Image 1 (tube, rainbow, N blue to C red):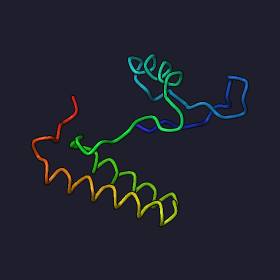
Image 2 (image 1 turned 135 degrees about the horizontal axis):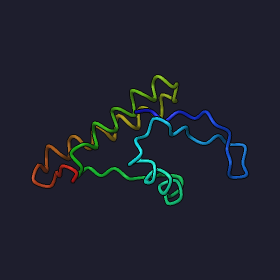
Image 3 (image 1 turned 90 degrees about the vertical axis):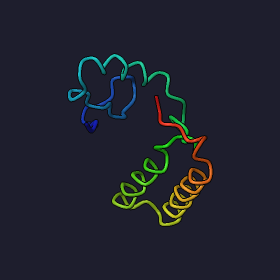
Length: 99
């Protein structure tokens, strides 16, 4: 489910607000609250202990390539994905699947 940005902002800015019409009703309340509490500039942090972290980084890389992100930034992401994968191989007892 992709969130599209199509409506002009209503919070006194000219920035558009996301179109939430494709978010299920149960998720809209969470989405509205999340807009108020997400830290800036990074909404979350990946840790090598998270079994999904390398895959998340690789998914970011694929999207970044399509969007034209600089090769230097993509190379750093590859390095992080590789380092996370190697750490997980060396520490399988510390790798956790998210709750």
